Structure formats: C-alpha cells, structure tokens
Image (tube, rainbow, N blue to C red):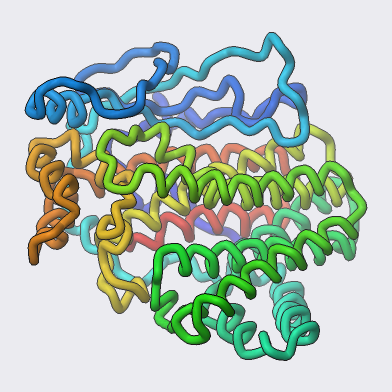
Length: 452
C-alpha cells in the first residue's frame, strides 16, 4: 500500500521550497544519536522584506509606553519568528549546550492566495481506513478496553465514558502509537507488539481525552465533534471528575509499565498540558504574542503528547537512540502541523463541518497562526482594532474572520504547516520499509489533506 507524496501532490504551498535544483530534496536529515531532539535544526522564521540567517533574538513581552499609534505599528510590523520548541526529553542538557537555533526566513508577501485553496471541503484524497489498516485489530481491542476501564471502575461514569470515547473522534493519537510501534518493531525483527505497546496506546488516549474534557470546562464549550460536551450534558462537576479520573488512571497504568524512560517522557506531557493552557490563558486577546510563543503553546498542548508517545513506542520496540529521537521528531512536527491545520480550519470551514462555531478560537481571544500572519498585512491595523475591542459590536467577529482571510493569514499558515509536514516525513528516513511506515507517511498526507 503506497500513498502519494503529501508535500508534492496537489497541496500547493507557494513560496515553500521543498526541493532544490533537479528535484533534489531539501528536507533536513534526522538528528544524530547524540543530539537532543530538535536542537541545532534550522527552523523557518518570518520577516517582512528579506531573507537572512541570524540567531533567534530575545523577545520582550508586555506593552510599551509608546503612543498608541506607534505601539500599533510596532506590534503589527514586528518580526514574527517561527520555530518548533526544543525538547530535552529524559536527558539533561549539558552546560555547553547553549546553541541558539537559526533558520530560513521568508516573506509573507510571497504567499499568494488562491481562491480555490481558500475554501476547504470535508473530502480527503487519503483514506483513514487505508492508513489505519495495519492497526485495525489493535484499535478495536483498545476501544473495547477503554470503555471498560472507566465504566468498570465507576458505574456513575459509564454514560460519560460513552460520551467521550464515542463522540465521533478518529482516535488518531493511539493509532499513531500503534503505527510507530509496528514500524519500529520491523527495525528490530520483532514479530508482534508487546503488552506495553498496547497499554501505551490506551494511556495516550486517556491523557488526550482528559485534556479535552478539562479544556471544554475552561472554555465553557457546549459542543465538540458535533455532540454535547461532558460538561454540557452532565455538568461541570462531573466533567472535572471525569478528567481527573482519566489523568489518575493513566498515571497508574504508566507506573505499571515499569520503564523509567517512558515514565519520564509521558509524565512531562501532563506538565506540558498545564504549561500550554496557562500560556494560552495569559495571552488571551494579547496581540503582542509572537509566533515563537504560539509554536511553544502548540507544542505543549498538542505535539508534546504525539512526540513522546512515538518515542515511547520505539523504546518498547528496543530501538537505538537514533531511531528513538527520530520518532520524537516525527511526532513533534506532525503534531505541530496538525495543530496549525486545526487553527486554519477555524477560519475556512462551516460550523457544521467543524462541529463547533466558526471562529471560536478567535472569539475567545486565542490568537493563532492565521491571525498573527494577517496582522502583518495591509489589513493588520483594522484587525488589531477589532481584537483590542474583543469583538463587542455585532458583526465584529465575522469582519475579523474576513480580514484574516483577505490578509493572507490562511495562506501563510498553510505554508507553515507544509514546512512542519516536510520535517515529519524526513524523520521517517531511519525506518525500514514496512506497511506501517507507509501509513505513517500517509498520516502526514491526511493531516494536510484535511484542508481540502
């Protein structure tokens, strides 16, 4: 089973250089075994008018004492930098590990807007059925077990379990765990998954689901995936208890895996969730947020779990450090691409397609990549006024959504997502060919194809 190349297929990211002269790939190689994941990797950075290489500058937070008009200009035109946060995993960085990342920089003005690309559809050229075929039986067994874990311990939570585990989600995170497990097993001549692999997938889904339940409480969301949220259907108290129970149960199962490396990896994810949520709440309606900070938050809230779980799967497969680090990088860049695409869909899909109101993130003051890019455009001044007003007037939110699209924010964010997808694909070069590896490549294609 083969999937088309998701970067060089019909996905068109203008201004994105994915191949050099003669079709030679410009994709980065995976990190060496002695490097911490993400360190010394060139990352794309955005400046207004020129291409250059320089070290990542220090960012000063907070508002200045300049006149309002001067503040507005500096906040809209200030350089925004794109990078994926480095992760130290289970290792402690040495005292001489202080190299700052530098990267290719590109101009938002070079990103053209194609009306045909600006209207997303629900169809995808990559079938999840095809992608998940190698792990279909694994997923079915996990689904049955998850419901019994929650409902079996606390009958009061049976209905809540049906709600959260049966609300239409594709459960991509545990599927990625199973795919990474089977792909890395192929590298170590293992014939089947271990019980630790299977328990890891359950832990990952429980942690992810717990984070969604708590997010819905914090955001006071009433709909997710087209169905009422747990807090809407059962109340805030039950929702908080469900999230707490899932976090506690996943922590218990994690301890029973009896592998210190994996325990450290997954435990860090739970801390990252809290860090990401706190960072997001601190930046509500704050138009001074940089793309650095946005990518940090995306890593903590989305990519951290996928990266740590992919690496953990490689640990249980008995892989070398090189392969384990490459699996972390695959999950990290795939997770970042996934979140950027999610943020784009908030501006391009209807409420029916999203399963929630359009522009919900923007309405709640969560400024994402499309907004940050649009703030640099000719529409930036008007958009900034609307954000500062927190959309108090009727029609303000819809006008802001229109400005994000007109200002090229959606197109520039697509380009950024393609950059991350490129890096995810590059990280798979260390794996032997297998059906599971092909599905991991197909997963990258699926993430991008959600736009179309």
